[in-house]
Image (cartoon, rainbow over all chains, first blue to last red; front, side, top):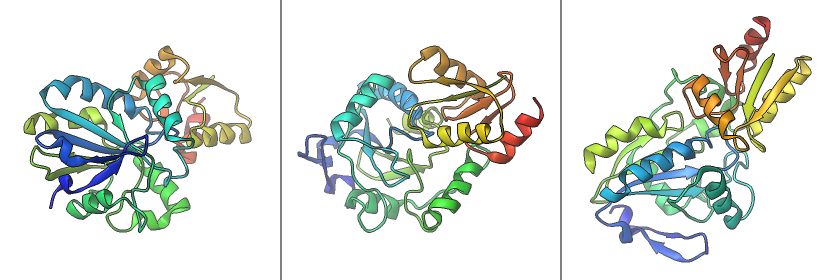
Length: 181
Length: 77
């Protein structure tokens, strides 16, 4: 089994098989429009622009599971990304990325690589842990997605090769992408 | 004067502003989605892509909503 076995929904509600991305390096990110990490869109777009011609794709999955930080419709989310961050990589339909209601793709991703721990030297790591403790203590347990902007790197054969928590900036994973391009 | 960098609808930006207000601290607010200049300034200060960023002089800053660190920043004002 690999990521090509999963089908996701586009913003228009159409099915899209991840097998269509066979042979490409993928970065799968759960995104949000109203999150403190939202400015990471800028660096995600930079990664995309830099590497897309070498067979790199970013797949964004908006989710409302983290303090309702992706409000609005799918169309509004697309517009937000385009207008504010010039995003041209693919943003799929909103959906769940953790717990029982998570998309099967996300259940698979977190089963492949568990929670990596936050980089506690990142200045926002402690406030994030505090906020989770206060509002979503159950999110801190287990391998589920902790917050918006968790990132999974997929190699050209569809294997999950790395997981980065929200506290890792997109620019910090450029070297990992280059290694498998 | 304290400056808060954030954007509309960002919940921890709102919490930071409310907290400063509750402490009676005056601040400037700069929206990084409405101003490219504010976005660049914000990233220069923190070297990161996370908001809110609360700063007193563009050098010392607090990233995220962290009451303890905000208290320290206010005290240093």
